[in-house]
Image 1: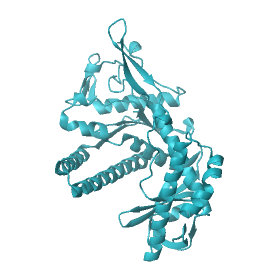
Image 2 (image 1 turned 120 degrees about the horizontal axis):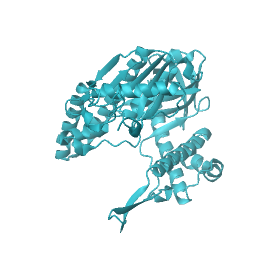
Image 3 (image 1 turned 90 degrees about the vertical axis):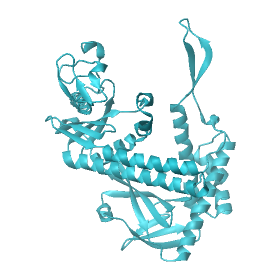
Image 4 (image 1 turned 180 degrees about the vertical axis):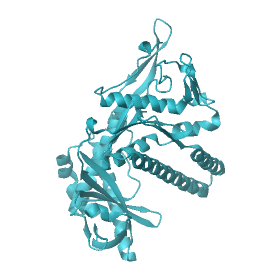
Length: 411
């Protein structure tokens, strides 16, 4: 099994000339990507690398001054973006009311699969960036110095990255790098891959069910019956603060307010990312190697905003649960653990003691679950984590797709 991570380095440019070289390279690369995007849009979304190279390679080099490998990277980057959009469109078909009704008087709805032909305009690359191929466009020198290729030739740039030396022990392989200019700072994001042994169910020493939410960002329940709660109230308060700031700025509508809005959005995203990093790191450090972390699969799960107050709707739908799962997955892999996802169906409605599934047993206002059959009661988030942990136990016992059946659970 291969595990790929992104190493974020901060570049320390030594002169204004070096900065001008990088600035020009990022802009020319962005323009080249837009040229490739326009060509693909005009030619039925052609994605064959060989055909695109034949049609565009010399144009990219002559018109935008890109080096040989940069031209190849621009084509590859645009193709990857279109493939991502193609997948996203296919996953979300267009649903519309046909205007007809069935025999019971219900409206008949129809789904229509969306393709790239649904795009009205070619994909636009707005943010200046530069993709660099390892050993062709960038290389690592001694004393934390990068050799970076630009449209004006190579430059040598010192960089800082906390803990970078751990990736130099021979087990990591560097790949593509991306240069970004954020504000007045320059960053280089490097892809690094490490070969790891495949995780075997038999090596599981711990099975931890994790219920994700808002009141508690995560509730973890292990095979010993111990529960860990990670409070989310402080995070909610801070998010509401960001929300108030955005409302105030949106009401002004000035150019300066719009610039401020953009900065606030970026700051909130960075803060959420940091919280998810801390939470996933804490979970991995707490349970260590040979742990099976079990999460609910929240894909296509709808958080009903009409069931909460208006002030809570924003928090209900906008926390980065997917990002938390991604962070937990790669951190678990690095220590020899694994993350699996199971169905979210009935996890908050099932009594973990007697198996009774009854929706009304859960009191959302009091955050309490009380079983009307056996009388067992506990925090509702803990109930979810207990059921998820049970599914993890069934998974390592050989059941690849564990699930609860309401009809066989005494309902």
